[in-house]
Image 1 (spheres, rainbow, N blue to C red):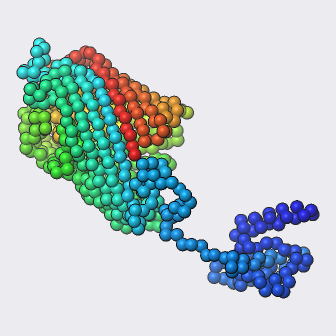
Image 2: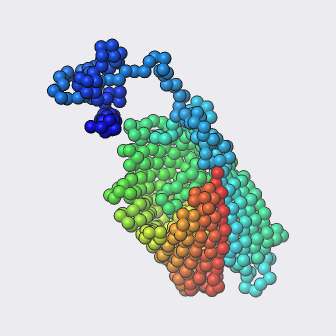
Image 3: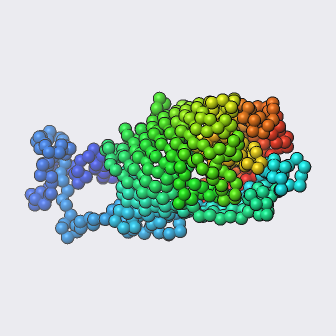
Length: 604
């Protein structure tokens, strides 16, 4: 064997021993020719439990059995340790976050991608961290929406106390700053303590083609400028305990906090005040929530929380998530929710319009108790992506809008979205049903309504019908549907209104596609066919007969551009057009309605 081949053999043998778990100081030596001298042997620092020639892996706590080398067998000796003068012990490091300080990594407070103490990349002291997130959300919208008018506010015939010209523009700028101070190693487990506060600063400008739209006083004109500072979270989170070696846990959270009752925001998505007990079990397979929330009053024009105003509207929630149920990658969720509303006084918003009770029927203050039982799924089954939601509402209220008598509430809701990914295209199909009330004068209300919806469904706020609030009654400011909502609830507003179960309901069937042209660029297209489930309530409210169930067709398209291929800069431009059906034309007119929306979201 050549010298080079011999050297390769010895190196290969050493690597094999290392992979086998043998002391890396052990190397193969010939039986006799390379045996160390007595003086060299004295300097060998071999493991006292493993004699020369024994390279077997030791079992902790047990002495290995001795074995004689067979003739011709290689014997493994231990190499000597370095001289004491050349040896220096490893320096202890305080923790794994500070280990990179000696490696020359840059730290810039304004750069979220490099090491940054403001993004929680290292402790500010001990094991306490601090994180800052700032989000700028800018919206400019040009839209056609029927505008309520009054006797003193329009010079057009046929517009008295009904609806006037439709052109509207709006500019909204919101800056939210989230400040988080927390303790603990959060790589594998939740923080031990977390303190979070999120102030939000808003400026908005609205311009209409009619007076009496921006304020109850026609002297305010057609343009409104407003600003507001709200509080979108302020809570403390305490990690009670770990319940398994894989950091299943129980935690409790108290304060103003975000909560979403289901996967797509159909029933309740808000930032209320409350207390929530939550945790996981079985290696995060199961997640649970037990919570009580009290809704906060909103600012009328910005929709942000008023931190010092709590509504007399309570929500009690218990839900359970089950991961990988039936199929891998498929979630099940079971929800039980109880809504107790005691808002039996008149309430007017900042613009002077009545909000509670809604100005429909007898305009009577009312209270209600409603329970929701829900079953939701989300995930994929093979190539099929599937989201479903079913809710049953059951309860009673003391004074119904049209009869003034107590009534029972029985209502249904169902939705499903199926999608398939084909290379860079996702094809979607959507179905949704919200039951309507067929008789507003009986003692049973069967129109489904949510507590506060924000549906990520059928195009979300790219859709005209979901994005816009379409008024039904002019002077009373009762809307057929709400901004960022699907249901035809006949509420006064999204910010202040009560749930209303005397409504016409809705049917939706839609198709859509998402096209990921590049990692930075996405195109989305949606088509939705809309119908009323029942029209009896509309006929009574508007004193019209034989209103058609055909609501109309909603077409929308959007382009989303992320120049950094991340969520730090997201630019969106969308166009939506609503083509009225016979029912919409009988309530309003037959002209198409449009909406152009530009949205820029910048995140630090």
